[in-house]
Length: 214
Image (cartoon, rainbow, N blue to C red):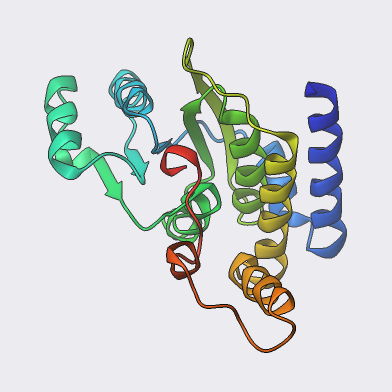
């Protein structure tokens, strides 16, 4: 499983590099810039705790994407001795792809070149494929920081990892998440070409939530 994921990840990156200028990815791969931010992917409060502790220990600003409610997040900050000015809570993301696409241009504008990516160990394979495609397109390097999840780990399917990798690649090439278009086209096909199917709750969410808000 691990070897196949590496091969698929390499193929996705190669595809991106063949259709997109090489410079941002080279910059991301070879930068010697020390980490400048801690990015925590929401979906599990253990990730937030680990990310805040890492930010405090390394004296780095922390960005939490799609995390717990502000009241609980502020309580965690106080417990870790972090001022609110050092932690950015961002709730724009609806899924893993959105965790990166909602923030990557902000990070680039801030001159960030190297980010520590904090997420659960079982979520990391998919997150690192998506993140390195999206962040790499802006010249930003990601270094993975896995958070233990046992005994609650739930291994994600290879299909889900590949699917999100392809969505990320499409976003790099087009600047858009093509999932809503695919969902609408699929609904039209199922209805015999008469038009898009009536939207359900998931269709109203342009990203579509991952498990546990990921």
